Length: 303
Ligand SMILES: [Zn+2]
Image 1 (tube, helix red, strand yellow):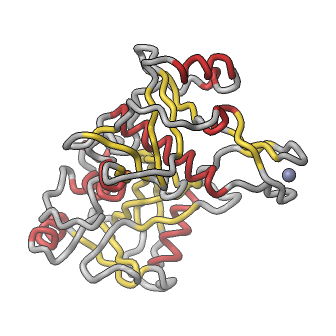
Image 2: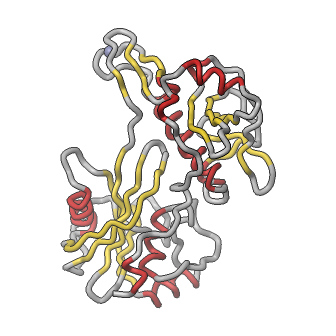
Image 3: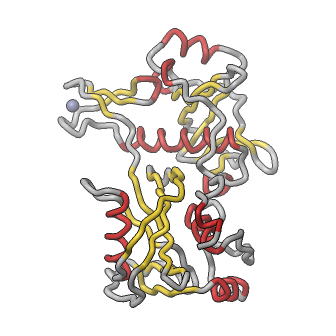
């Protein structure tokens, strides 16, 4: 086992942040009102998952205060200079509005963290307008970090759906990559799947690998995580040691799975025969973690 394999994944594009969430301010309406009115305050304006940007390469355009009622202002936190950050869904957008997949990996730490947080929360609000207990409408509370049923008063918190994603490596240090049935030929990535209720992360890794490619997994090691708000996942990255190598029993999700040596992967990517996940993804970082260094591709990576 090489030295790099003992390390965790390096900085992941969507797992960065430079703003303190300062949760103690969320239930203080006077403080929030003062912060919103302060000239230094910055607001992430989001329309349907895309945020207002400026410049090239783009940065978030945070200088405009949209006209939204107090309840619709999502408080994101405070930076080290005491500047407060909010997010708000706006109806009007233009060509300056960009999505996380487009700009998530070129943004700086502050903007990447703000945008991931804003998009994840606004996705949740958009799809949780009704109480799961009684069906009545819910109202936004705690500066956007809670919804409360207008009839029975039950509290509903933003949800995050854990998913495991893993490199599967055999005793010869080969990497298994799969192609989903819905993907075009040549597109390969790591296996992944959602954690089921009542399941540990390690169990989810073993179950997913077994269901998708029929391999028996031994040791499972955690490598890092990255929020993936499309719409609300948290990707938990692992390395899984395969104790068997015979790939079979496809559950239909994976159409093709292949073992790669490092030289084989390099050749397949270099010749354009194979397309890897984009650099923004934890899948790409996991593959590079096994490979030992960043992989140069043709730039044709799918997004
Ligand atoms: Zn209710």
